[in-house]
Image (tube, helix red, strand yellow):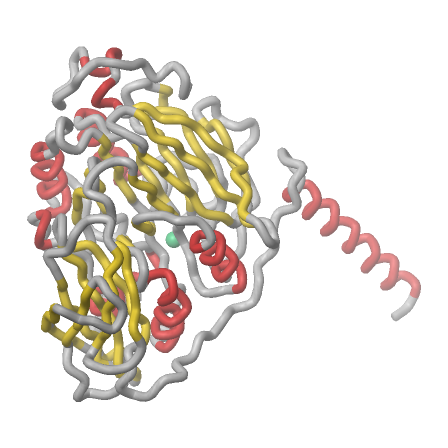
Length: 445
Ligand SMILES: [Fe+2]
């Protein structure tokens, strides 16, 4: 390399370094985490041993147990009870499998067990043999704690986020889309199922779809979601939905609505009609907290995916506002951002708090570029991996925190107390939902 060439390389190095420095240290003094390698998780048991075990809530007192076996003859049957090794009940269910080009999935079992007591540990065994698992059902009343993580993937950062989630107790995990990042490489769905099993077999994982779940292909798989709908069956029928891509459920005193950013949402769509009917059925005296999950954020000051949630916002935001939705969680943008209560792009004490929590740890890395200056409605934003915690203490108060992944600890980098809109004196005046005025939202704004 001659002298001029060396100088040119040196100049380019400084240019790139300066650019990286500007992006990573633009607003915070924290060193943002670079991407980490993919983790592939293998099955070490026999062909009939259960793998990829995960659970999801079905109605107020049932739980769906889902797992995969390589062996075709394993029964879709779950034995369960309150003492280890003593199974006083059993249930049978159904199974499915799917073909995606040359890949053929294992036998995917789905068995619903119950009725189960609330906030109770149950021991269970899948298919009549193999390892015993245990789960804990959610409480039927407050308090309840949700762990929330989007855009997980399966990297070393994912493992770090999961370890942080598992290091502190919680009741239900909510995932606003983008699970495995298989992106048509179907064995990665199996690997993801194995990676999350230690967590998803113990607490219900309630998920909705992101763009990485679509996996459509012209003519052959025009509607997409082949793997997602086969593996991650959510309780959509119980809420009157016709599609696994959007549904709602009640837990303790919260009504949770999981919307689909990648299926139709305009005023003539099934999802829109279903959402309207679902919101009309919400009884705030029974479920004072209403929480919505989407994938593409409606509010976003990051340059990544800017505007991608706008058409859905235009279609559905007014409905959520009129129904007194308290919080909207989104993923998709690989960073954390919390907005104040907002409606139609303006701060509004009767609108939901919007939170982007798409920083679970996937292979694509962080979305480093936030707009400058920060919009006034954006309260806190940071491109770091992490997860969130929503602890609802009672009908009126909840605590939200964002737990940034440090190397060994999770650290609450952002936190706020929230008051439910169903007890807000300011928002009860003209609300179309049942209201009991008690508090104001001044402490949040
Ligand atoms: Fe996404």
